[in-house]
Each structure stands twice: as structure tokens, then as C-alpha cells.
Amino acid sequence: MSDTITLAAETRDRVGKGASRALRRDGRVPAVIYGQNKEPVSLHLEEKALVKALMTGHFMNSVIMVAGQRTLAKDVAFHPVTDRPMHVDFLRIGEHESVTIAVPVVFVDEDDAPGIKRGNGVLNITMHDIELVVDAADIPSEITISLKGMEIGDSIHIADVKLPKGATPALEGDFAIATIVPPTVPTAADDQLDAEVAEAQSAEAEAAAAEPNDDDNDDDKVSVQKKD
View 1 (cartoon, rainbow, N blue to C red):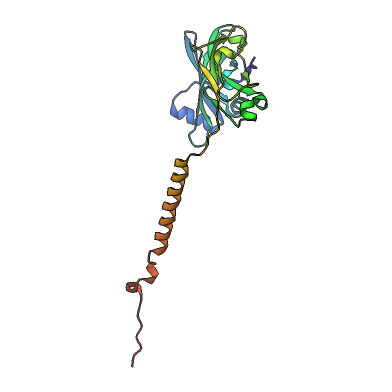
View 2: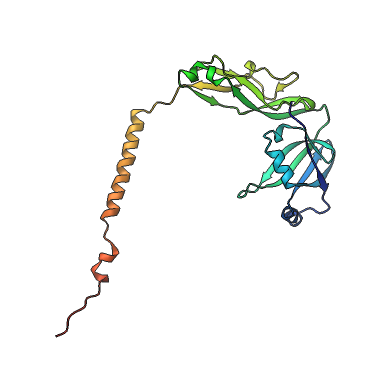
């Protein structure tokens, strides 16, 4: 089960772009808590504490206590250049409320998969996270899937995965999570394409080298004649 994360927060009296920029200059991150048919609450968090929580790797699938309220993180906005957190949305939840949440998948026993170890196969992962419907008090930190005994061509479907007690997939059907596929072998067409690209690059280089240098242009030269 995921550990509960606790973040200290203070309410915001002012909202809007100007107020948010001022908070960020002071090392604070604007946030909001909503849900359960209650009024949204505008807050701000310490940026350092938030970054530390984000670095745990399970921020998005942990219960987070914010200002004494039980929540789930629904969205974190980051600055496009600096990657600093800019805003966080939190959803209120009850202690045993049924929630839908994406849980990361972790693959183990790769060395015990003949298709990878001996056949040089490649694990093609189609789902890095699985959305589960689960009790808020029993959210798993990850789903572990063993690759032991798997050969090239074998696939792992959701029916093959042992889920935590009480958890069910949010998606219907026996969907695939990963497949061991054959190694990629270069074809004759690939070799020909590489040769054509190399030839074109070589021709461009030769053409560039053959272009006259501006310094060699007679029009630019100054002639000095000796006077009699």
C-alpha cells in the first residue's frame, strides 16, 4: 500500500495570476482542493516540500493529507522551461471511498525470461500504468509483474496479473500489458537507405568544398600598378 504523504498548507486570500506569481517568488506553490460537493479551497504549499514529495515517485497514487484533508493529487502543472511546479489540483476523498487511480507497473525476473535472456527478445510495454478502482485506504504503490518463463511472442494480459484484494481494473476486457517481441533485424532495405543517405551527405560535402571562396574572387582583389 502507498504511504500517506502529508503536506503543510496555508489558505490563499487572493487568487489570480498576479497573486500566484507573488507566491512563487516567495517559494510557494498555489494549489486548490475540490470535490465531495464542497466549496473549493485555495491554498499555497512550500515548493521545497512539494518537490520532495514529487521525488518519491508515487505522489500521483498516494493519499495526501493537505491542510488536514484527505486528498489525491489530480494534476500538477510544471513550468515548460524550468520544470518547477506551478500549481497543484487536489481531490477530496473519504477514508474508504472507492477511487479510480493509475498505479505504475514494475516488471521483475527479466533474467528468468528465456525469450529475453537467450532469445534477445525485447519487452514491449503497452501499459506502464494500470487504472484501478480501489478503496482509498488500500491504494497499492505499484503492481509487480513477473516475466519468469516467458518466451518470444508471449504476452501478459490483465487476467494474468494478481491484483490487490478489492481492486478491479477500470478498463473492461482482457487487455494486454506487455509482450516479448523478437529482436529487430536490419533489412536489405534499411542497408540501402543508409547507403543512400551516406552518399547524399558525401556529395553535399564535396559540392561545398568545390564552391569558390569569396577571397579568391578577382572582383574583390585590389591591383597595385608600378608607376614609371
